[in-house]
Amino acid sequence: MTTGNKMLHLNACSLGHDFGSVWRLPFTQPERSRDLNYLIELVQLAEKGKMDALFSADFYSVRDDVDSSPAPESEPLTLYSALAAATSHIGIVMSASTTYNDPYHLASTFASIDHLTEGRTGWNMVTTAVSSVAGNYSRSEHLDHDSRYELARKVVNQVRESWNRWEYPLPQKHPVAVQAGSSEAGKQFAAEYAEVIFAAQPLLAYAQNFYADVKTRVKRVGRNPDHVHILPGLVPIIAATHKEALELEQELNIYANLKNSTQAVSRLIDVDLTKLDPDIPIPHSILPQTSEVEGMRSRSQLVLDMIRDQNLTVRQLVSAGTHLRMVGSWNEVADQMTTWLEQRGADGFNVMFPYTPGGLEDVVEHLIPELQNRGIYRADYEGTTLRSHYQLPLPSDAALNR
Image (cartoon, one colour):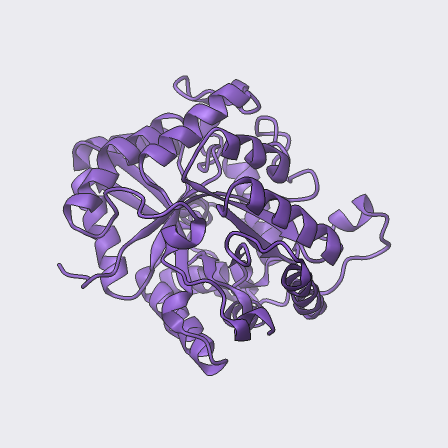
């Protein structure tokens, strides 16, 4: 396989567990989820693997799975600032809402962190999909989907204006702009503002359509498509052999919580799946043709499309998850990742470890060397800023004044 000179980009997506209730397994360490020394060990391991960045979501409210998960992660700006002090190269991408933060506060916070990390900072610009957040900020109601993106444009423009005016320039001029929405409004916002996009397509055909759509939009607004990287979420379940990887997947599936997962998907698509037989295909007649939810609309539509296209049962749906899963030997999964890069389904991946620390160790010690052997992943960092890792230029004067 050949990808020319194109290199794969990898983010470490949080440092927790991205596979149901797998935190209950004896070889995980959920009790250390707020142990700074433990988290430093994990991020230093990711840096050993020459990963582009550590990526964190933030929910601004108690999550729906609070009764079946360990303690939630710490507030990301606080935690990641501490982790950055224990590293020298890996970037830190932190989520901050354009709906529930003022522009000056965002500008000041991210500028400060970018200075202190000498240019290793990225801002994941989220609009906040969860309506329950409004009450935490003394607001009577949550903005609707499209209004949140209209506000996001205003906020991001004001943040950039603040950065441009300040006398002491930032190491990267601007922190790297990251975005994760895939609705029509989200894709257009990404085309105008984002440099890295966290996508969620679990099948190559879906990913190729999304990739082509977004790159076309980027070009249409006068930007260079090569300067916008699309990174789907990836849950790698890997082992030395294909058989061992399948056995690991089976073990992990034992810890999937069918009840809680079904409730979560029901909320996501606004269709009650809890009363259905989990082993009979979901009736298409109960599904809306187009998602109109005010929360994660793009993810909701993706799930609806998956159910129809693959005629899924409830059990199959919650087992597969809504992110790409690659199962196989280290060599096999490296081949699959290369295929996604080569066939324009991705520029890289947000790696969501099924469990830690072992899932991260397998990626760094076994999967990444396979990618390096294929010539599609760096042998070492070539610079010290997050922009250099992503091979992104400094923002042009036109972009600075957009």
